[in-house]
Length: 110
Length: 115
Image (cartoon, rainbow over all chains, first blue to last red; front, side, top):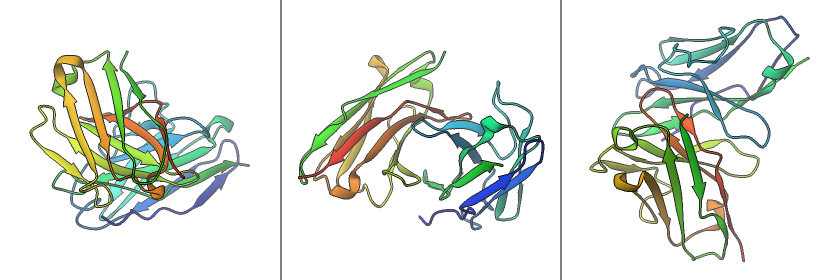
């Protein structure tokens, strides 16, 4: 049950786009289309921004998008806004009712 | 509106026990798998345990096996986590998470294991 690999930090100016990667293995990210992305503001509970690799829950702005290639999933935030500054975590189903999370990426809006 | 409200957290000494509860509303609880996820202070998210919609299938992270027990009462729309032989490294905010597509998170309950 090794954690998925995310960059510890990412940044961009308002209006720009930023991509956060999430690298796993054939057993998790590469083997299943159950990758989710969560946004967490300080002191708050996580919120699902993307599920099943690229699906967006109702109410999540279309500035947030997800994709996957091989063992790496990506979250793209377009048109950065100040309120996007938060921690972002990926997760993946890893088979046999196991789930694994990434270590988290702190997104800073410059 | 889907709501998950955790309770039962608190301060406990190493080796002690706690029982966390999660009250669900706004959806048909018995149709959905559920998970517990925790977050140690200043750290990332860690999946702890899974239970299927009927409770017939259960799984745990290695860190939880043998000490933490997940269960549910579909008649009372409730999810539980029995925590025994607690260690200082179990100190965390524990979140109840609804699965099955879009994950919905509760607000969390804080468990502190300290002497």
